[in-house]
Amino acid sequence: NAGVTQTPKFQVLKTGQSMTLQCAQDMNHNSMYWYRQDPGMGLRLIYYSASEGTTDKGEVPNGYNVSRLNKREFSLRLESAAPSQTSVYFCASSEAPSGVQETQYFGPGTRLLVL
Amino acid sequence: AQSVSQHNHHVILSEAASLELGCNYSYGGTVNLFWYVQYPGQHLQLLLKYFSGDPLVKGIKGFEAEFIKSKFSFNLRKPSVQWSDTAEYFCAVIPKAAGNKLTFGGGTRVLVKP
Image 1 (cartoon, rainbow over the protein chains, first blue to last red):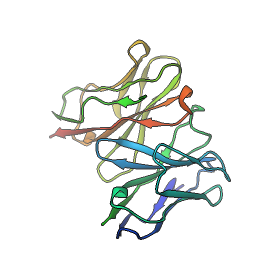
Image 2 (cartoon, rainbow over the protein chains, first blue to last red):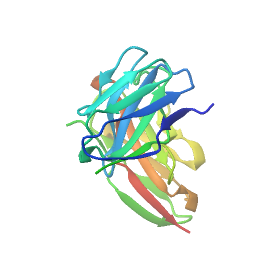
Image 3 (spheres, rainbow over the protein chains, first blue to last red):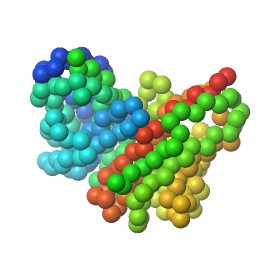
Image 4 (cartoon, rainbow over the protein chains, first blue to last red):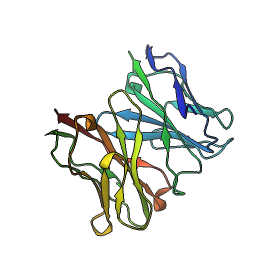
């Protein structure tokens, strides 16, 4: 099993450009999550999907949209990138919704630089 | 605001020294607790977790953590570190009364000198 995979690994954008970060998991997990990691702030939840067909906002959703394409895939879209969105983005998945004694498994991350 | 606090941002120590990283949370009620580790250039991996039962939890690579409910703490320990323990360590909490979201502390960067 590959676990949780993310593409791309690195990306440089200019302010105002758009892009989609892709995430896929092969563990047949129901729940998927997008986080951003910034120095000294740990990981903050952007959006999550408790099950196929549902999405909900996390702590820092502004400037992002998500799509739960199917059970395996959960994409994060930046419609108009801003320098404040420079960060490392992590996708994660868990078998059941967070809080039901479930461990989240993380992907390798995407480093995004917005100029 | 409810939060997870890791008091040390950076820790530098020599091989064979003992390590203790502090984690405090501000949520009342039932919580699930985790420590994750991120080795240089790698993704987050689960070190250990506490859901219920014995408050002293043993994880991988010789790490352990103790849940002290009265102190709202979940400190991570390792009696003797190795150079390969150089990493960033994150405490995380799922408070059942706060929407079941996994909330991370700010992380502690640990550098072990050979």
